[in-house]
Length: 197
Image (cartoon, rainbow, N blue to C red; front, side, top):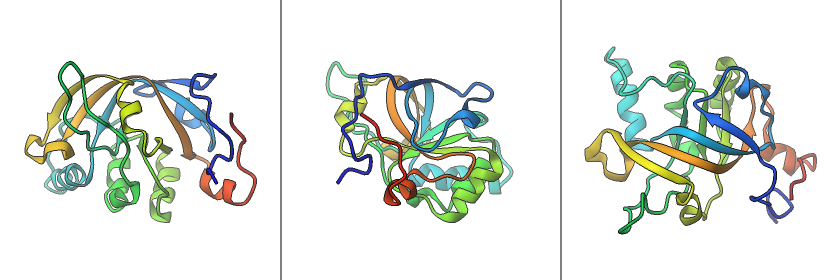
């Protein structure tokens, strides 16, 4: 059974959200909201997170200012000829949980991946006014069509785990954890989740 318990209509009226986030937008989103993201997002998986936190520990500047930004947990495959990027589906988020609170302290407003987050991360999101969104697993080819430009930002030697800047248009996602502490996965499991379709 789908977590959402109904087919998603990705061509319907999803809430449009511009990245980086404008004031008040993150605070207005609620667990279960379906959104279309457009604008700039950054990427990072395990190696990028490890290196970002090492820079913080050493008192060095990060490659980008994370304030107000969204970080997508993805390791894209190489682009085929004529394409901007290869498949770009989400990776499992809890692998980044040990690093996430430190990045939220830097002003990061949202993370995007798949799967649930641990309690320390959920608490840190509430403390720093941040949210967690899920992208649709198994849809890497579809999601890559929503990525219009890609730029390498840092850690080139990490290959697909390097930090990239994506320019996206109508990139679909669902809010899992909001600033109030709600968790959409838990609500669906309890039978109170929002019906979509």
